[in-house]
Every structure is written in C-alpha cells, then in structure tokens.
Image: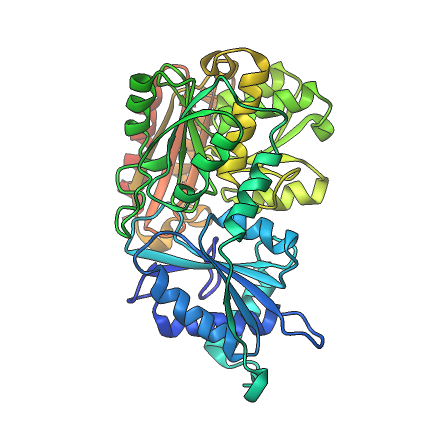
Length: 451
C-alpha cells in the first residue's frame, strides 16, 4: 500500500484523517495527472454516497479539480460502479467517487477511476502521492477563462439505471425481490431498476439520513433482510453495501447466498450458454473450500489470487476471464462493467433464477459450504509476517502437521492482518468442532511465541 492510497483509494475518519485540505489536494493532483490533453477542458465525473461528510469532501475535492482548469461534473448520490460505467459511456477523462464502502458513517474515502473505467494503477497512485506529499511536480494554476468550472447532471443516475436494466436477458416479472439498500447509494437505483424489469420489489433501509449508512443493515448485516424475505414471501433478497459495489443474497427460506455461491450460479449459467472463457472463475484464497470442490465437479477451473478485488481484476484482465470476485459479494462481471457492481450482479442472479424455473435455494445448494473457522491471534506487529513467524520451529511444525491433517478434506490458511497486529488462522473442514479446536490451538501457539 502507498503512503496515502490503500487497497481501495484514500480512506480515513472524515474531517480528522480525511480532511477538506487533503481532499482539495487529491482533487488538484488527481485532475492534473489524469486529465486529458488538448484544446478542450478535461471533464471529471464526481459522485458520492450518502454519508454526512460527502458534501463537505465533495466541495473541497471539486475545488481542487477546478483549480487546475478541469471541469467537474457532479452526479450527486450514485453507486461507485455507476461512476466506472459512466466514465466510459459518457466520455469523461476520469471519475472520482467519495465513499468508504461498507464502513460506518464517520469514515469516508476518495477513489479515482481512469478514463477507461478502471481503478488506478500503483504507478499512477504513487505519482499523485508524490505530488501531494513531496511536491514532486509543479502544477500550473490557470486564471481568467481557463479556471475550471462546475456543472451538475442529475440525468446520469438514470443513465446508469438504464444500463443496469439492459444487462438482463429478459424480464423479472413474476418474481418478488426484497432489497436492503444499506441506507446507501443503492437507495437511488436498485428499486427503480428492478421495478423497471418487472419485478415486484419490497424495500428496507432506503431512507438515508447521513449517519445510518451500513448501520446494522446491508451486506454486512444480513439479519434484517433474512427476516424480511421470510416475512414478505420474497423469491430472493439482495443486500447492498454503502456504495453498492457489493451484493449478498438471501434465498426464499432465508438462507444466505454469499459471493462464492453467487459466482457459482452465474458462472454455471454462463458455461451452459458458452459465455465462460476457458471455463474459468477467478477468486481469492479466502473463498470457501466448497467452491473449489464445486469447480471440480462441474468442470470449472477456479484460479486463486491474494485477497482484494484489485488482484482478482488483474488476473481477469491478464487472461481474458469474464467472472471473478470475493466471498464478501464483490463480484466482477467484465462483460458488463469494469469493477464490482452490486446492482448488475443482483440482476444477473435474479435473471438466472427466473430463466431456470428453480428456487434460489436449489441453485445455491449446488455448492456445499464447508464449515470455516477464523481465529485472530494477537501478536507483536513486527513478527506477524510469514518470514518472521516461520523462524520459530514450533510454529513451523504445528502448521505442517495441520496441513497434513486437512490435506484430503480441508484447508489451512494463515494470513497476517494488513492493518492490525494480528495473525489470522483459518481452517476449513467437515467437522466444525475439530477445526475450531485445531484453529484455537494454533492461534494460542502464535500468541505464546510471538509476544
């Protein structure tokens, strides 16, 4: 990770870590680096989610964009994947989204997209960081008629909704779909799009007030949607996160359909219709073991990457794969968009269910979920990486023994936290009591030796 940019843009507590001053600098440096050249003013699209700090940071960011002579086009509250799509479809030079995704309301973030609709490369982010933190390049400040200006376009959200609807192979009439908008950006898109496709839509958590985004709702808190689906008799439930780039689903019985199962359902349909290149899905090492078992049973190759949608996308682009994602519900369908798109993914899932004539639970049941236990071991921060903890013979031997024990019917995964002094011990297997005990024993050993 860089000095400002993390794995998904610049993040922090609004007005404390992510200040208006920093937002101005990010707007200025980002517009300078990403803006197109030529006689016309470069155009940069700006969107935000429903957080109370969104307007504050938007004002500062846009001021920075205009200070280098670029035009800022403000879309208002809109999902992150809408920015990625509209940058391409409407010919913008770049796009920027103000959101902290699934985090609570006091956090916020700023994430850029290039003119191609993809997140920035490490090299471009490092150049922007160097300008902000080191003054590495001098930015000319135009005056007179060359100063940038602001326009507002409230038609852009409807253009995104039309695009999302267009990705559906047919109509969703006859389906009752319950949605949880997380009091976030999907509040302005999901209901309208699904109703436009003919579905009977019932909604919860679509009344954002600036502070209730992700608060006990959405894809990180499925309890409310689970009960709502059962109570309303819906065929399917869809839960979005704050900026609507993720979606998790709930079947008609209240059973959870996570990202692995969503990819299973969509990819098998793609395979049946000859739309799955090399019969391959790209997933991360955190996907459930049952996902990989399903792949073997149905002739689907599942490639594994490091945790993070950017690594999934890199692998997809490098080898022309069309579907990939994470267990958390961040699913990338490159046939439709350049980033995870919760609404499009939800529409594809509903479309497959409708065309199949089967229940959501029946399709989800194709993939058996193996019990998965994750235990965090608190350790000294300087010792949490593999190169350090593997110097301890007791830890090496314990890991080797576990890997041998679960080699045929399970999996062991050890990961240091990227932000905290923790080592995460994850074990999958058929016997939940056994894997819990073994994971606890290894976590205790880490804490004993690494403190």
